[in-house]
Image 1 (cartoon, rainbow, N blue to C red):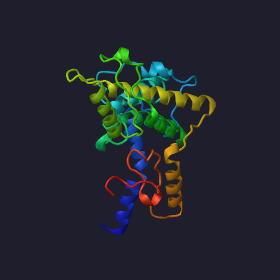
Image 2: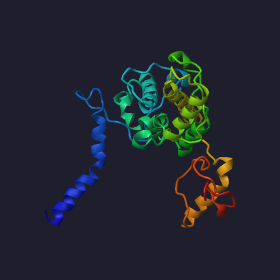
Image 3: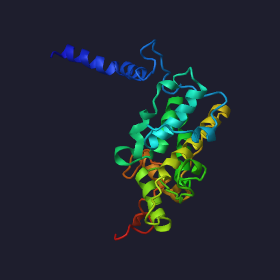
Image 4: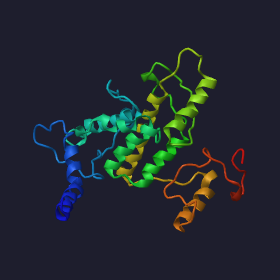
Length: 270
């Protein structure tokens, strides 16, 4: 293949990325067999002027084919938007679009109950601080609340605070508390990760309502226990020194202790 031919092919592949993405989303339109809808740009999707009801949205029935925390959290919000804005582009999106986030994705990273609402926020163009506030709230909230007990066979599920947005950490901490304090060895309570997405949906809707109605842009600050760590490591990044962090926001304490040169105790065994 000649140089010009390769350049031409490369231009089509790179330059056509936006067109291909748009075409792929357009294919999600349930009326694709008819006139195709032109979907909004990412960051410009609509939200109802009066907002969504946080409790009604989070407490709505989930379809039988909604499997996983990412699908449920995304689906509950999208279904609420479909009801409120039936002539918008929201009906084009199936809840399963967020199945990538179930269980924190392939590596059990960010909880799918966060990633579902985050996907909605991204389409809306929500400010970064609003998304960060949702994440920090998750790290500090005692999941799950009892507000959805009427929807599930187990009531009063034991709660825990994860101090992390990671699925594997959030679930493991809860599992430890549950097995030590509540499990009777017979009937296992498997409703925790079904109730938790509803708590996240309610909080996300509250935040988006505040942003769209009053211009609230969210709030985030490091945890008091890791403020000095955050300030130091972000400064190192700005100075292009080893040890700098580019985008870390989570409390560093749950994963590692301060090393001796920071003036604190070293990790166990060091």
